[in-house]
Amino acid sequence: MFKHYLPVDVPKEKEGAFLENFEKTTGGSGRLMLFAGDQKVEHLNNDFYGEGIPAEDNDPEHMFKIASQAKVGVFATQFGLICRYGRDYRDIPYLVKLNAKTNLVPYTDKDPYSQQWLEVADVVALKERHGLDVRGVGYTVYIGGEHEHAMFREAARIIHEAHEHGMLAVIWLYPKGPYVKDEHDPHLIAGAAGVAACLGADFVKLKVPYVNGRFDPTLLREATTAAGRTGVLCEGGARVDETAFLAQLHEQIHIGGSRGNGTGRNIHQRPLEEAVRMANAIYAVTCENASVDEALAVLRG
Image 1 (cartoon, helix red, strand yellow):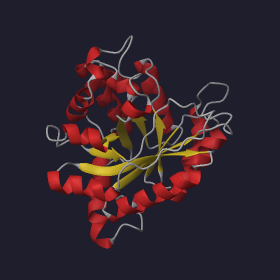
Image 2 (cartoon, helix red, strand yellow):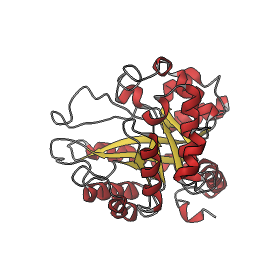
Image 3 (cartoon, helix red, strand yellow):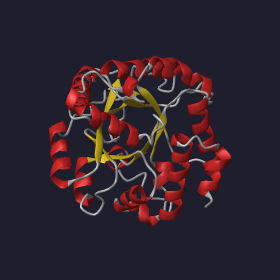
Image 4 (tube, helix red, strand yellow):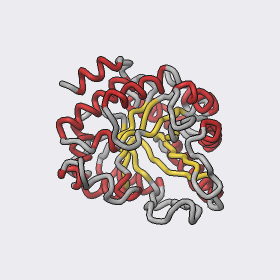
C-alpha cells in the first residue's frame, strides 16, 4: 500500500521493516502525528516552567507519561533523555533527535549550526540491545547561513543510514539567520520543502506559512507540492486555543495537503489527563480523518 513511499536506498532485506515501520507510525494513514519533546534543549526551560504551565510539566517524565498513554505516531526527543527513562517506557514509539542547539545566541547575530551529537549506529544499538520501539531518527537543518552545507552533509548521511536500517528519517528544516527576512514566507517555506525532498527525508517539519501575519491553508500547497513524496508536517507552535488549533490542523491537511503535524507545547503544557486527550484529538484529525467536532469530543472526554 505504501510502496510509493519506499526509498530506493532501503536494502531489499530491510524493505519489509521499513514498510511496517511506516504503516505503524502513520496508523495506516500515510500521515504522521509527531509528539515533539525536543524543546528541553531548543527552548531551555521556557516551555516547561512559568505562568499558565502546570508544575508537572517541569519534570521530563511528564512527556514520557503522555507518550505512553496517548495515541502518537512517534515521540521525538533526544537520545540521552530516552536513555534516562527508556527502562520504564519501553513501548513508546520513539524518534531519536540527533542534534539540538539552544536559542541563547540570536539567529540575527550568528548563523546557526546545530551539529550532530551521535551516530545512527548508536540509535540502532540502543534499539536492539534494550528492545526499545525506535521507529526513526530526526535532525534539524537551518538554511540561509554559512553552515548550511555542513548540516546538509550530516542530514544526508543520517537519512541514508536510517534507511539502510529500515528506519524513518524526519528533518526539521527552518530558514534562519540574518539573510532571512521572513521565515514564514510561503515561497521560502516551499523552497525548504524541496530541500528536504532532495535530502531524501520521509517527512519534513516546516514553519507555517503566513501572509501579513495570517494563515491561509491554500498557502501550504506550494510547499506540499514541492516536497513531492516527502510528507510535510506543520509545526505546532506556542499553545493556542484548542478549537483554533484543531481547525487549523484540519485545514492544513485537507486544504493545504500536509501529511501531519509536529506538536509539543499544545500537548505537554497541560495536566497529564488533559494532555493525553489533546494528543488523542490531534491524532484523530491527523490519522483517523476525524472532523474538528469529532476531535473536540475526544478532547472533552
